[in-house]
Image (cartoon, rainbow, N blue to C red; front, side, top):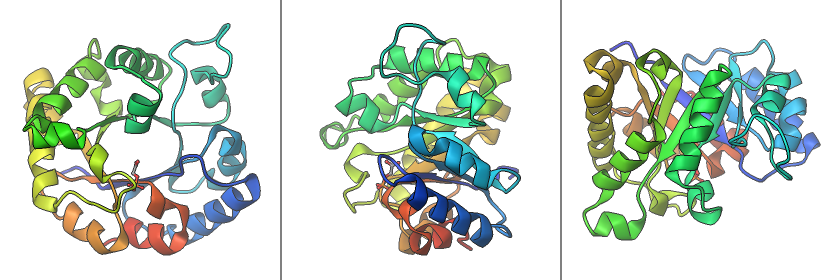
Length: 250
Ligand code: PGA
C-alpha cells in the first residue's frame, strides 16, 4: 500500500500567539524525525506566527475554514487569497462544528472545496454522522451524501489534493471514540464510494483520516486498520504530551 499516514492537529479556537509559537516550536523539534505527514491548523490570527516557525519543517500549515468567495464584501470572512498569502497549504472544510453550529450546508462546502482547489490548496473534507443518524442506521448514507455533494464537480485530476476525514460527530470532543472496527467500516465504505466516483486507483490512493477523540492510547489501534490512513486530532493536538505520541505512533 502506497498511502502514507497523515496526522493533523486542529487547534480550533485555542491559544494566543505566544502559546501557539511555543507549541509550534516544540512540534517542529519533536517531530523532525517523524516518518508520517503532519499538519497543524491554528486559528486565523495565529497563522502568520505559526507559518514562520513551521516553514522548512515537515509540518504543513493549515487553516480551519475559509470563505466561499475569492474576495469582496463579506464581513468577518477570510479568503483563500489571504490564506495563501500567509503560506497556508491546506484548508479543513466541512468540519462538523461548521456544519452543525454554523449551518454550513453541502452546497456551500462544495463551493469552498472547488475554490480551494482552484488556488492550489489541499483540502481536508470532513464528513460524519450525528448520533441519532448512527442509531437510525444511516451513518453510511449520511457520509455518502456529504462526500458526493462535497466533491460535486471536482475532476479526477484534482483528487490527489483531497483528503477525507471521517469524524463521527458523537465522537468529537466527547472522549467517545468509534471502535477501530466501526471506524474502518465507514472508511472502507468511503473508499469504495471514491472508487465508484473516480475509479479504483483513486480509491486506493486517497487518504482517509479518522477524527473524534483520538488520543495517544487509541491512535495505534485506529491506524492499524486497513482503511484508516491518519488522524485529525482536536483536543489532543493542543499539547505536545498528547500530540507527539499520536504523531509518532509506531
Ligand atoms: P477531538 O476533535 O479530537 O477533540 O475529538 C477532533 C476534531 O474535531 O477534528
